[in-house]
Length: 178
Image: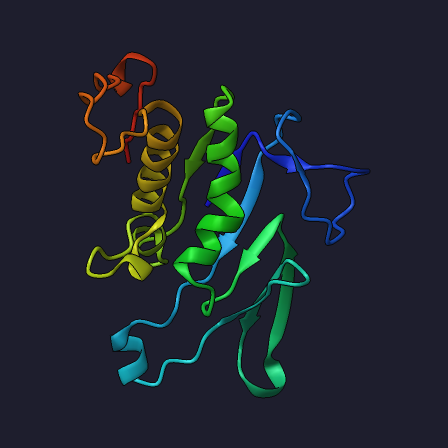
């Protein structure tokens, strides 16, 4: 998953400072390792990747036994197979949405081979809110923010008439494609 225009503040080193500068314009690269699927669990598949959220690294493990080789790669943010949909959204997408609602243009996209978890991360499952991916969460967050900002609060116990509804579509255009 990649997000923009968020970028790290500071001297560009890969420290653990999670403060981001929305005005820098640099691309932020976020990696998420998906959990093993049911088929992989059934056949006892061993993971070939390990990840460290704290160190922001992903390690690729090649070979077996004494002939094992490891290569580590650093990213702006790393989520392990144990990270929740909520974690991914709150730490990666919510800051981008805040910028969008302040008028900045941003893009979020998922990239990877078939079966690597793009749909799991982006869409999730709509069977329960904790399984929602970042797209349904983003839509909910946008409409909740718009409702809180632009729809007048109406007390239904009051005797006066309700105010005219605010047409949200006049102020915002939302485009979603994948």
